[in-house]
Image (cartoon, rainbow, N blue to C red; front, side, top):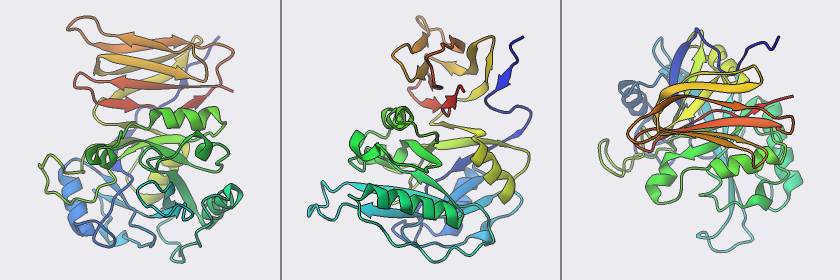
Length: 315
């Protein structure tokens, strides 16, 4: 008998999280305390404080309602290109897996064009105790050749709200598929990458646009990091994923009202479930074939906002 395989755990609490954030410690306009207060008021429970190129701890912000993940964002730029306007970069958010470890020495940055050195850098971050997230490849002017052969990543941004506000396509779904088809087994996140140059409510404000929903038993550092390591979350800019599982040779999903449910795999045999007329869909299923190596789900809500499941490997 084909057993039901839960892809998202059920019966757990849900915590809304932004895993890419800048404060006055780098080029953001709000202090860490102001970020905490504003994100709490917007319904968030978790924020990763990822200021540029310097690691800071924010354990003083953590309490029963809010968890601060200690992190930083590193940049590997192609310095052989003199113009910053067309210079390719790798940006990585580095999330400390424990809140008490000493991570303060930031690792030296490798040469952009030496992919072995970039991979060694990622491995060194992992050895030091970080989860490594690949940020906004479209904004970074990355192409398939830049993604090919990158190893050791925990996840990649599938959506970046700040990039959207700045005029770049924030939907990085194609680049996620490039990494997956290259053999990288990694999760996907939607983030704000907020700098808060504009006040809340302004059309150019870059907060509260992209997030993940983490399912976990409680709100504390080891539990949330464990959920991130297992992939017990989905990414979204609005829609909700209620249930996601494999049963009877099919992947099945229930969600908030949607116009479109897309199932994507490593082949061109993908499938979509589409609403008709003014109706919405809240359920979709997709028969899995032997040629599939992974599958993921993308849900488009009535207003065009999108939810993204992680990719799930079928071996």
